[in-house]
Image (cartoon, rainbow, N blue to C red; front, side, top):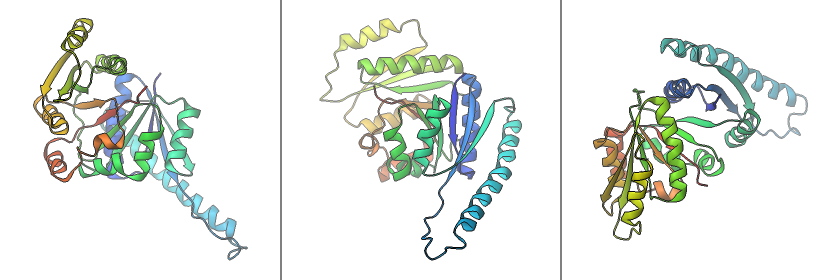
Length: 277
């Protein structure tokens, strides 16, 4: 059974992503592990020698009480969407988000991480901001990021950006396996720029190798890589976009001010990032 880690702060953004996580877990017949983390403040105990432990115990208890109150609400959301049978367990951990995610991945043998992001403008925060950017850079399993305005819809079409490298082929096979679970099709995009060096024969080899799969290959001539990806999402009606590389530099063009405005209006879809290697 696949194990999916879902870090949550119980915000509206996280609760929206929770629906996507439930549907994902249901599709892959997996289990959700809900993770809530908190960091206790650093207190110089020389000024509070008597109350040092009392203060920490009080803060920990407050987090635990909040955790107990919020978990039933998430289970209610699951039942409202007819997903109450999805297996779920819970973890409340003290420490930094990245540290606890890495710890949970190791201890719980996690296969995927699903996280909410603060809307289209939050793509910049998610992909470039401190905490989550570190998560993207450090962990070596797929991450599904869900913008806050991305209302769940049945996954029928999965987009996949490629440069026809061997590592892309390995990732595509994983995407196709996921697509079969969703009963979805995969549409691949290669943006051929003036400096592209992919041979046409290689593309034909890929088409032949995957001829029995529910996948199509789209080659677009353009030097505007990010804009072409956005157009691809819109015109091919992509429900989830999968990408192999999620290093910050790649996404800086996607989240520039003009493109962020377009994203806000039209491109609120989840991005599934596969680690390189």
